[in-house]
Image (cartoon, rainbow, N blue to C red; front, side, top):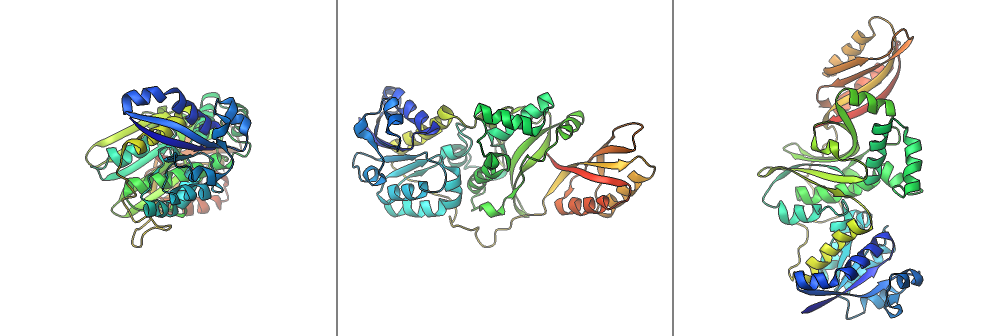
Length: 426
C-alpha cells in the first residue's frame, strides 16, 4: 500500500483538528482510499501543544527547513493563517517539490499567482479547498463538478461570524454591539473583529471563488466591500415586515456587460434558499447555464469542518498523479480587456426621517423620477409625531443613480436625515 507522508504547519484550532482527523481515520483511509497517510512531522513553537495531542517529540520542529528537507514528507499542510510567515513557508515547501494544502484565504487571495508559479516549477500540487466556506466542498464543485457549465451567478453567505450576528439581531431585536460582545465571548468573533464584520474575510473568499467560477482573475481591488457595523436593528425589523431577511452576501455575476463582484449586507426574500441559512452556517448558491440552480450548505468554520476540507485535499493529492492549476492566466492583476462593473444594478431598501408635513413624499418622488427610480413598497411609521420614519423599496435601478438621488433628498428642507440604504437582491 502506498504511504504518503504529511507535515502540518501550525497546531492551532484548525491544525489540531486536522491532526485528529488524520490520526483517528488512518485505518479508515487505508480501507477506503488505499493510501496510508502518515503525519511525519509538525511545525509548532509550543512543543507542549503537540505533546498533548499525542505527537512524538521527535516529530515536532520549529524549523521550516527541517520540514521541507525531510524526504518522508510528500504533502505540507499550512494552517498558520495570515500572510507571513505562511507565504515564505509555503514557497519553501513548493520549491522543494512538496505538494501544499492550505486553508489560508488571505494568503491565497493575495499571492495565488506567486504560489502557483512556484508550484509549476516543481510540478507540485497546490490545493485550497479549506480556504473558502470551511467544510463545504465548494472549490472541488467549481473545479471538478461544474466544469460543464458557464456559471453566471455566485451568491453566498460565506462568513459565519456576521451570519451569527445578523441572525441574532433578527431573532431577538438586540443591537449589533451587544451581540458582537457575545460572539467574542463564545469564540465566534476575534478580539479584533474587523476582518469579519468589515467584510474582508468574505472579500478574500469571493476573489478566489469568482476567479474559479468565471475562469478569469478577479483581484481583491475589483470587489466592492461594505461591512455590517452600521446596521440598525430597526431596519432588520422593517425589512422583516416587508417580507425580507438581511444577510451579508458575497455576490459575483458574469454577464454580457462584464463581471460584478461585491460584498455587502443585502435583503433577500424570505422564500429564497439563502434566507434560511442561520447562525454560523454558510451556503453558496450557484447558477449554471446547463444545470440551473445549485446550493451547497454546511458549517463554514471550526476545527473539524475545516479539517475535513483539508484532509479531503490531502487524500486527493495522495491519490492523484495529475496536477491541475488555474484555468485562466493567473497574474496579480486582472487580464486586460476584462470589464468589471462598478455601477451595478439592484433594488434598494431606503429609510429616511422627514417632517410630518404635506408634500414631502411628492418632493422625494420627484427626485426619484429625475433619476429614473420607481418605488415598489412604501411604509410610513409613527403617528402624531413631528418627525416620522419613511421606509421604501425601489424597483431595480443603478447604484450611482440611487446615491445621487439620496444626496439630493438629504438636501430637502423637510427631510431630517437619510438613515439607511440597503441593497435588495434575488
